[in-house]
Amino acid sequence: MNIVMRIVRWILVLPASLAALVIVFAGAKIFDYISGVLANFYFGPVGDTSGTIICGLIAGGAFVFAGVETAPAGKKYVAIALPCLPTIYSLVQVSLYVINFFHHIGKIEFSTVLENISLAGGAVIAARELYKSRGASSSPTPIAALPEERVP
Image (cartoon, rainbow, N blue to C red; front, side, top):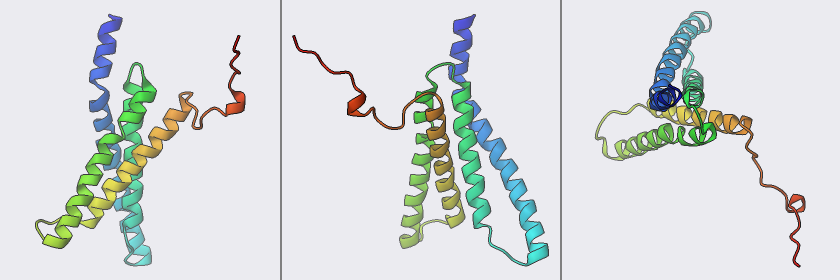
């Protein structure tokens, strides 16, 4: 039964990450909308750029955290691999935005590009923190700390 549960957990790594991403992003967007309405009511029209960035950062962190906690083993490697997906997606969005800027092919909002970049940033930040917390050293071992080689 143990091997079956490990296989099921490996299969569920990506779906769990995506579910956490959707749930946290939706919750953050609802909170951002409510806080934006209140800010507009009390302070007048304000920009929503900071809310867009914060929503992306939180959702990216939840994406990586859910995947790392779902993985049965190799959590450090999962923490390295998972941020690649939102990073590649955000690079595609940025390139499409640049192409659209010069050729006017389709409509891509700058806020969408900003959300994707902050999503990738949140994923990378969470991955770095999770990787460090799993016992990996962030800096290489100094040469003075390495054992000396003894030649006979």
